[in-house]
Amino acid sequence: DDIDALMPMAERFYAVCPWRHVAAYDPGTSRAGMMALLENENAGLFVIDAFDALKGAVGFVLTPVWLAENFTIAQEVFWWVEPDVSREAIALLKAGEGWAQSSGAKASVMIRLDGMRDEALHRLYLRFGYNPVEHHYVRKLG
Image (cartoon, rainbow, N blue to C red; front, side, top):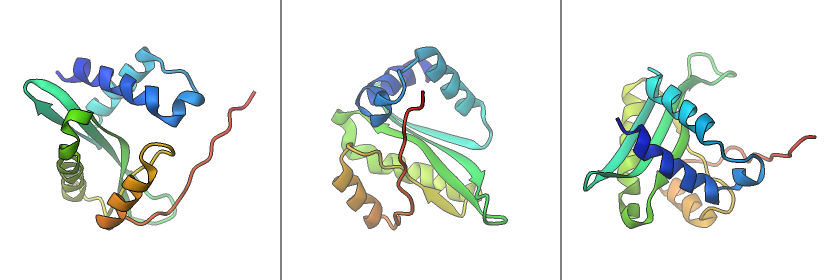
């Protein structure tokens, strides 16, 4: 039932994230991806519902680590909170982590997109026990 409220948040996120420089936002593809996530039994999606309006969401997917036998992680797919409820972002993260642990995940993996409150998110992740492990680079081809 939340899909119609999730899509405008997805578009607002994409408008400010660095992926916008790589590929144009496509509402149909975004909606299909969100529906696939909502229908996936190995996915957890949690929302902030404030005054009957969605104000934030976090989504995780359970997946095995391909180099470590029997080690399942909960990989964040997105984490977005509208500015007027940003103080609730931690509760949203905690809900996702709780779901991940109860679903058998042995680790939670969070994303920090470059140029999106880099230092604040870095400090937050460190404070909650996350360790940096990778930094991705992308180049458009063709």
